[in-house]
Image (tube, rainbow, N blue to C red; front, side, top):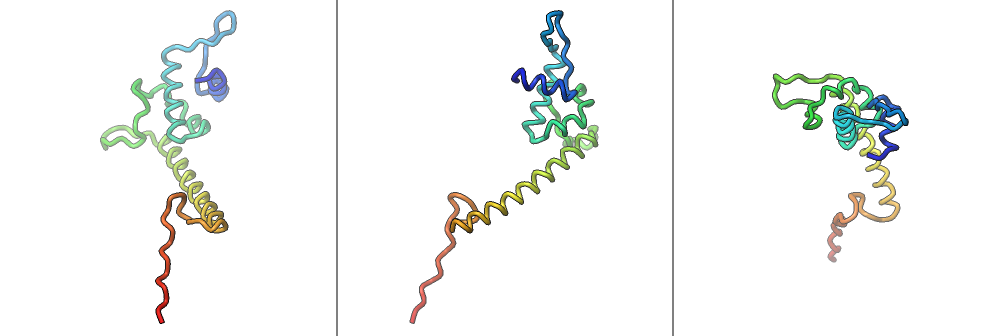
Amino acid sequence: MTPRALRYYEQQGLVTARRTPSGHRVYDAEDIRRLRAVRELREAGLTVGDVRAFAHLLRTMPPEGVPALIPKDPRAERCSTAEAVARRRLADLDDRIERLSQLRARLAARLGEPADGPGAAPPPEAPAATT
């Protein structure tokens, strides 16, 4: 992570760095584990605000990484907060994809291109009329 990202995550309350007497930030193994979890969640599509909504759970994340939000084992504990945030983000992404697809189709139509995107097969030509 860049120093700028570390400072931002600190400002957002996702990690708290200790300081040396000279003012340099010091991160311990727990901080690094939390930062890895934040990065993994961000790479999965969550925003910093989403992660902040369940930041209190970051300290409980296992060292091997972020677990599935809905465990495959029905007896495993589920985190309703994290699941709700992730489901809202997924719905938001679906809405955005739909809107972008509609915009793309409109623009493609104005350019006379297939609405399906690059490489899409052109619509079949109508058979020639016979007389």
